[in-house]
Image 1 (cartoon, rainbow, N blue to C red):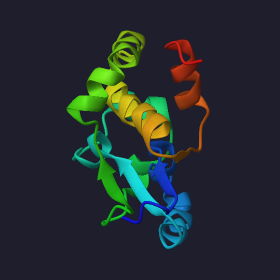
Image 2 (image 1 turned 30 degrees about the vertical axis):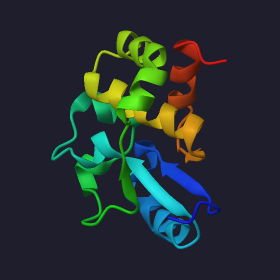
Image 3 (image 1 turned 90 degrees about the vertical axis):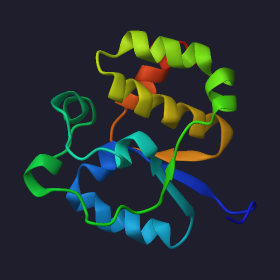
Image 4 (image 1 turned 180 degrees about the vertical axis):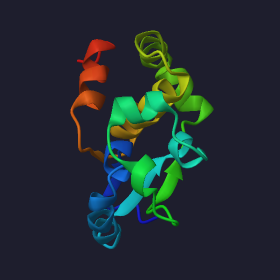
Length: 131
């Protein structure tokens, strides 16, 4: 990865909408693209994840190949952003949603940009104490 390039994390709200995935591939040609690692590791989409992020992936399925590279939270960043992680875990019923949100929070604070189809992610950050 070129350190001068733009790094963008794609929120699951976009990946759960097959109609948006083509635009994500176009974006991947212009920036260093990432997706939350906890989202990539899933084999099925639990109801709580689909309910939080929306979309219609259950009906249409996800692309065979995910655009971008997985982004996971290192131990160093997990410690640095531990308070936010705890708040997100308390706020969300689903540990999977909380972990995905933590990956997005760390990426936003440590790496660069997030693109999302919904405001829920950012509302969750504010409710968890983001300034």
